[in-house]
Length: 98
Image 1 (tube, rainbow, N blue to C red):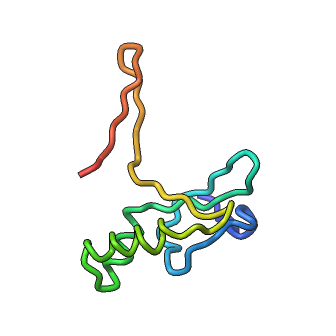
Image 2: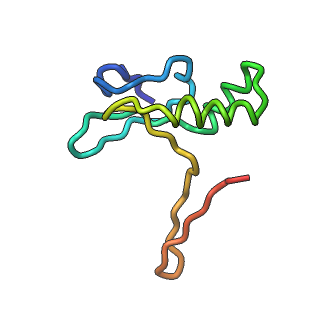
């Protein structure tokens, strides 16, 4: 594994203070600069570690994080991670969703 400077690799991207442990990647989009990809699951876990119930953490996430427009280089959030497999010529998608 190679260490990177996230400020250099994602110059101009919005970072969410306190949620560094939820960063899972950097994405690119035509016409915009790089953006930071966060794990929704990890954000909820971080909020719960700060003595929030799951319900309160979800409310905070939707209202204060998803609900805020942070500009063209605002954060993105992975809700459902998928695995793709081709079976008998057709693509199938799987998740570990509970």
